[in-house]
Length: 406
Image (cartoon, rainbow, N blue to C red; front, side, top):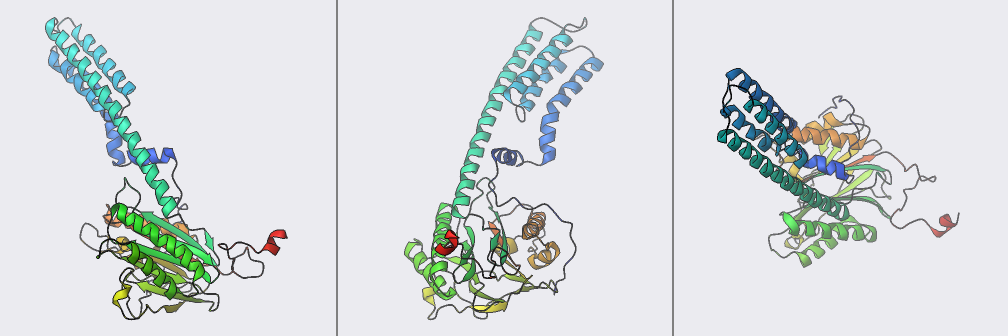
């Protein structure tokens, strides 16, 4: 049993919201550590100052002036073309000033140094312009990927019936921000239902499969009265569309039925078991299925349909759904990420803050994620305060006509 350790509150996560263009551009620049970015900005100026001091102290000679050509080249890594040209202009002025000293050589050698400095500055300005264009292209690609991610796999609403929800997604390819993990939480006529899924493979085929899983789930979750039938519809659709015989999708379906309050129904299809957090003791328990079932796309290999199992889920309890990109993350010593322990240490009244803290622990553990990862947290808060009669709203089917007229 793991007990809760106090942790300082942190601001709500904004991972679910599409970032603005400013944040996207900042994200491109943050591909390097802050110290490297700062060094790239300061190094040209520091180089010019150091070279000038050495030239003054060491005496006459063009060898110190010729080294100034390195400053515009260094500036191209961080500055805009105007900044590179300004750096080159400073170097030219300093070179001329060093050349006018009475004890400095002049003539063709000095002219050659000035011409070389001009050429290096012009080439560096061109490279800086090319770098800026590549950064803009990367920002555009990331913005399209983010739009696709939010269209295919939009963040769940903050509240689904009696549940507060929060989600966090991290793609292994930082430039893509999109992958094959999927999640959803819906309020249906049969009670709140949620899904988390992990598509085998990567790239566009995995994204297409994840989109199919979410689309079928959103329809079946409203139409079918039990989770086993929902799982069957998902499996049938996948087997119809999967092109490779080895493709499959692990998934966990959960429901909070109206007819059994305080009870959670779970159908686990080859997926890591969800973690249940008791609101009284903060004990974290893995809800393993009593009888394992194969993943979606492979259910025809078993003679019987998957059997749902139940677990108590009362007001104040939490349920964490996740993909194996979380638990299989390793630190430099090869140790797996201890999700249950860090979940107990990250608990917060706000589920978004809980996921933000948990994600921070995950990044500190693995440093560089090698697999997509998704987190979906469900927190039971009791009846929806928007319902005056204490019954969960049916947001998907809309209000009744009489209530609209009222």
